[in-house]
Picture 1 (tube, rainbow, N blue to C red):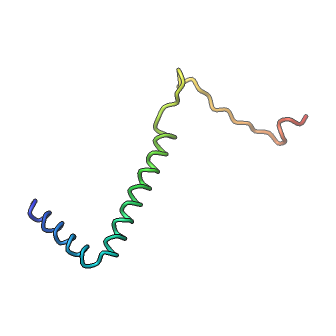
Picture 2 (picture 1 turned 180 degrees about the vertical axis):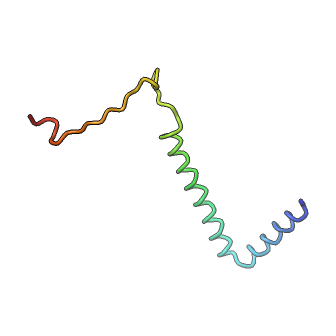
Length: 74
């Protein structure tokens, strides 16, 4: 099992040396994909998964304003 993995890594390195432009593009795309995935997860973690820094978050209310006109006009 490990021999097959090492053979695959060796084969990939040989192909990377034969065509360095393709290898660089593949590494760049992998890095961009991993970075974008990390950024999206960090954003979702900060917005949706963490609790709010208040004493009792279960007592917070969400209020919504519904009016036909501007709230400051009589």
